[in-house]
Image (cartoon, rainbow, N blue to C red; front, top):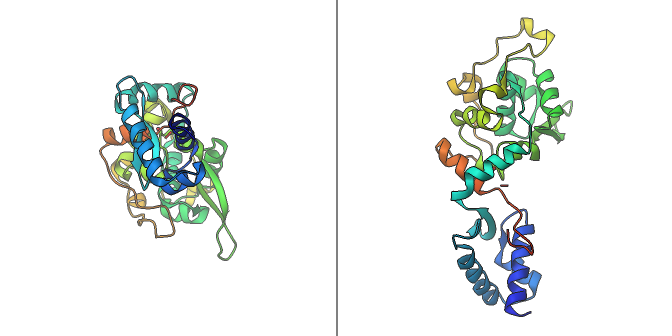
Length: 255
């Protein structure tokens, strides 16, 4: 494989990989020595650094991955939003989505315990809007259904993976941006007819409701703890991870 063919193969592998492609994985795939592959990758990284490129290759998490450049984040964000009509959610639905996001996989009874209200109707709404999906059943008595966020959730919020979730305090701000500003937050409606005897729903996430703020960090078997970047930095990071198809042949979302 000559240098030109090798670079083309490396570009295709990095673009197609769901996770950062490691040097060992790439070398095994192309059948070349790691030193040869590393040298080719270094040349590609330098080549993508030019101002005429909208993408760049970064070495992250022990591998290599494509990212959009920071100067193009705004236009990429507008483009992603234009692909999906505004999505309206009630505040109870948004709060339930936050619980699922930070405690996933989580069962309906666990969500209900955190929020203090019946959430069956809200869960049905989030499933219909494809923001959450089922993730099997928990191995406990009754085998309740587990829920997790979906790929649609990541795309709506401009995230490449759950590691980019913001802090709880910043979640509502990100949600308003993802759902179309304040218009994306619909008026609160009763979640279920059984709520008359249930405790009142928690307030908006921006006020750090006790029910949500009491959520413990996920255990080692759950998604890793999230960092707490500033909202602006988070938005830039989220869009930066958005993978955008390079111009053919394999020149140039993670959100």
